[in-house]
Image (cartoon, rainbow, N blue to C red):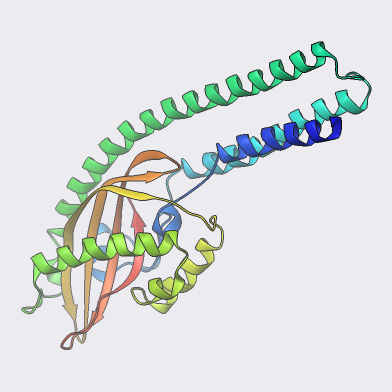
Length: 271
């Protein structure tokens, strides 16, 4: 009986704290990857093959995810040492009361961590909202001056393109959560697919996110010989790790200039 109690107690602390630090991320893992369109790199002054770095807040989340289970294991080890060391011989009422106090202390600890994490997320959301608005303005200003690098195709339908882009965003997000790589492969270039496949392998199998708000803005659409390139700014709110986070990212797409040719995502750029 005592061995069972020890096992349950250690499992409770380890699992409870680890679940509190689940790390679900959106399509692409919230990182910049792939190639950027020539029109975007020309107007922004960046090289097409040099993706921007992901937001600096991501490494902190990974650290918290690592420290949570470690803290649970350490706490469980201490309790186990007390049991096996003879501190709780006989399991009297006082021992049961002490176990209850330990469990209550763990509950208070987890609640305080959630409260601190919620405050941090609230501050991050406010900051990200300001950054998203600034990036949207900068994006539109920069893209408006790129006409000298190509011509806007006559066949391009802006409204239909943005409508399809938003539908593809939600479709790919679901495929990412479901770990359906075959569905993702239909929408991206082979080079980006290889990067996405590697990134998805780092994420939990039961990844769960939800698109709360989504806005799409056309950045640029130009034709170069028999290729067309476009960039779309997505911004809004997405639910990750049980928290609603502001996001802003640019998808760079490419397609052949022929009837009914599909668009393929060749790069994702975090803003």
